Image 1 (cartoon, helix red, strand yellow):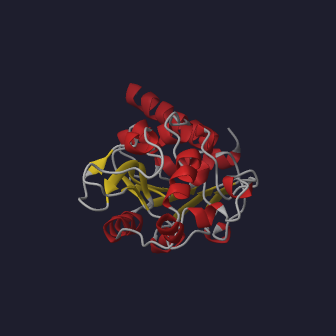
Image 2 (cartoon, one colour):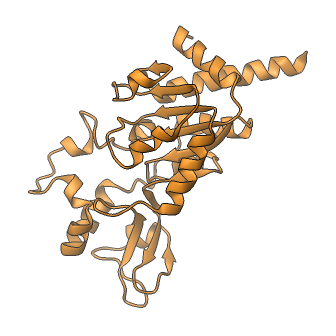
Length: 254
């Protein structure tokens, strides 16, 4: 274990109210593309006149629903994806009574699949879908097992419960995330470039002394952090959580 990971392990050992704030980089080890990385979805040649960002906008959804759903099914839903070592480590930290909440910009539902109970999904989830007319809820099968524009039995369009570009975040989710971050004794920010607002602005509510950033590339908040690791987040979180668990087991033997 290198020095930075040892320091992070010590921070976790002395913390009792950790909040994790994560972005797309958390799920790349689960083979879900990071939109904004060098090899991410926004840089692929999609043979489209519009950017992927524009294609998941509210405007595109309303004007070209069939094209929206074609793009959505092929590039935003990954039903075979499984939690990676970062997701699993965070669930373990929650079980240990160390981590109080996960705040995520991801829409894949992998934190819950790994076992995390308190997850605030800022941008919604592909696993939830609802009829815009009668508000009946549907699972992801309603999208994946259909073609064209998915329709409810009432005739309304079934829309993914995700926040599209040009749409507002859910106030209730934001308020819970802000409260959790404000009360945290340690805030770990991982797998995010911190350039997508308003979500990225939530870290400004943190008032503690342990701001930890784990991201392969630099972020605009690096200079404010007490600890910065430019490493693979899945590897980091697994090693430090395993080390913390081992220390706890050894302490119990005494």
